[in-house]
Each structure stands twice: as structure tokens, then as C-alpha cells.
Amino acid sequence: MTIDPKYFELIQADIDGEIDDAGKVDLENFLAESEEGRAVYEELETLCRSLDGLPTIDPPAHLRHVLLNQAPVRAAPQPAPDILQRLLSGPMLGYVGVFAAGVALTLALVDSDQISRGAFDDVTGLVGTIADPRFNAPEHGMISVDESEVAGTVTLRSTGPLLIVDFDLSARQPVEIVAGYSDRTIWFNGFAQLESTGTSIAAETGAVTLKMDGKRRYAVYLNNPGMRPTTINLKFRADERVIHEAQLSFSEGG
Amino acid sequence: MSEPDDTKLMERCNNGDRHAFELLLAKYEKPVFNAAYRMLNSPDDARDVTQTVFLKVYEHLDQYDPKYRFFSWIYRITLNESINWLKKTNRLDALVEDTADTAGGPEQEATNEQLSEGMQAALMTISPDYRAVIVLKHLLGCSYQEISEILEIPVKKVKSRLYTARQLLQETLIARGLH
Image 1: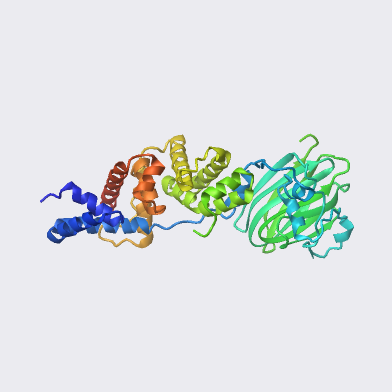
Image 2: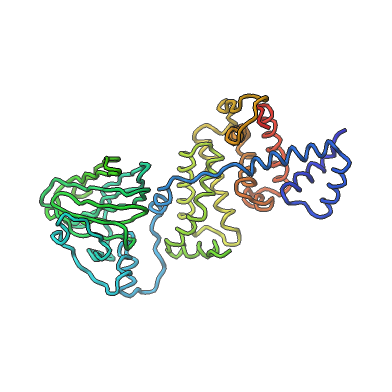
């Protein structure tokens, strides 16, 4: 016995939850009388259940950050902004958003002496730095980190004598990052982060050490008064071992 | 839906609101990645296609027509980009040779994992057009009408394509002792 093709369609529609009332009655009558039809129904239903049960997998942890990074900044059609809006909409990746957490808008350069005592300090209150809304810092290089402990990107930018090391990372466990530089004329000039807590920092001559966990977006500012070519060595540590090393180089003119 | 409407989020994106883009990303990153993964059978390729999809969405925000649903648009881009990727890597034809037996034989009962792997392998043996309807129906939970909108084909054709795709899958699974 062959099955009328219309019943194949009804069987599929029923399993897919797309059958109408009349079709449902028709199908039920057919299935009540057709063993072959019931077998076809059962086979298709089993297959569909298997397909519905295919597991979904999680995208790589850092993919969202990469996607956000690669999305070009779009100019917002805005009325003439007041000074606060201008500060908060600066193109420097929203670091200035950290100001919003403060009661007062304070622009302050942070001298490295303030935090060079070797102890790790929570930088929650360490806001300010050099958030010029007209900032358009050229990029000198970017490295990607794709380790099981931490993933994301680190980008080196500059404006005048300031070097900006832009960290956009997602860590699954506490990670320590040492940004070292051999040029002793370079000094730590400030720090900003998008989230208001969660990163600790210590600076000493020739190195800045950061500790972080979770998703973090922050920048370290270094003053390179001679604007000399220099290299920043990045060392990522987790569980007291080095998990990733990379370099970012600055040369005047990009 | 309690979260902001996709169309409103798109409007906000168009006005330069990156947080709105982040919300869209949070909502669609996983389905886009998984759809690409099922189309391409490679997490690395799926990651690259996902990046391309969201970059295209962001670059073409102003071309989005709000009379269509956002998910139709992004899923269409996902499937098109996946098929482009297959073309680019010369994998457009069904990958029969790449899909070795994943079960021990008809007499051996397949585990869930074997079944899942076998199903993915079977998916790679059918053409991308058939694979696309399966992905839309079973992974993304789209209705016939939604599939019709996404693929821009009549509902009647959705039904027949779905039916044929399932028949082909069933034959492959039976031949491999997985069904």
C-alpha cells in the first residue's frame, strides 16, 4: 500500500506543530487506519527529536569582546553636547566612562610615585588621567591572547609623548600581567578602566604589574618624553606560571 | 519580550549607541555561532563567520528595513556567509568523504554522543540548502513562515525542502546504523 503524498505533508506539519484543525482530523483518521502511516510518523518524529536534541555549544569566551572591538565607532547624530557629554562620548573607547562613577569630575595626572611602593592597590579611586574628548590616538600594534585562562586583545596607541596600552581581556581566573619596558626614561603616567573595580595595579621603574579576573577593559598610560622607539614586553601569568608572552612596539610615526 | 525590542536596539545602534549593539550581540552571538557551526562543522570557521556576520550587521545598520524582523536579517546573513565560506574553502559539495562512520555498526546501540556526532556528520552529507532549513527549523526554532522569510522562498518550498532534507538525513543515519 502506498501513502497518499498529502499525508506525508500532514505528518510533517503535525510534528512541526504547523497543522491546522481540519488537517489534524484528517491525519488522525488516516493514522487510525494505516499501520504504514503510523510507522512513517514514528520514524519522522524520532528523527526530529534527535535533531531538536542536538547540543548547542558556547562560542569562545573572548569572541564577544573581539566583536565589540571590531565594530567601528559610529558617529551619533547629537545636538551640541555639554562638556560632560563630550567627555563621556570621547572616542577613546569609553575609558572616560569611569568618571561617571565619581561624584566630581576630576582631571588629575597620577604620578607614578603615588603607587610605586610595591604593594598592589585597588585602583577603584584612581580615576582621571588624560581623557581628552578630541583624542584620536593612532594605533601602533595589537596582539591577541587566546589562552584557556585569559583571552582578548592588547593594543598600543600613542598621542604625543603618551603611550596608551589598551587592555581588553576576559580572564577565567586571576591573571597577573606585567608590562615591562627597558627605557628608563619612560614613566607610569596613569590608569583608567571601564569597569569601576576589579583590577589592581602596581608600578615601578621599568614595569607596571596588573592583576585582574573576569572581563576587564582598562588602559595604562606611560609617558615617553623623548618619544623614542620602544618595546613593551607583556607577560601573562596564571597559577604562578607564564602562560603567554608578547611584545608591542612604538616607533614615532607609527 | 522583556528585553528591548530588536528594532529599537537597531535604532539605537544607528544613533551610535554601542551598548545597544552589545545587547544585540548578547542575544544573537550564540545562535549565530551555533548556526554557523552546524553549517560548517568547525568551531574555528564558525567563529570567523560569526565575526563577519556581526561586522556586516554593524556596517549595514542603515540598510536594515524595520518592516522585516531583525532575526530574519541576521540569520539570512549567517546562512549566506556560511555558504560563502563553504564556497571559499571549496566545501560546497556534500562532504560524503569526510563523514566516516561514527557508530560501531547497526548491531551496536549508539550513545547520545555518537548520535549527535553522527547527526552532524549526516548533516554535512546534504547540500547547504537542505542543511540551512534543518538548522533554521531545529536549531533556531523557526516556523515555516519565518524560514520562508529568511530564505526568501515560498512556504510550500520550505515544506518540500524540509521534507527532502529529513529523508536524506534519515537514509544516511539508517545506513550508518544510527536510526
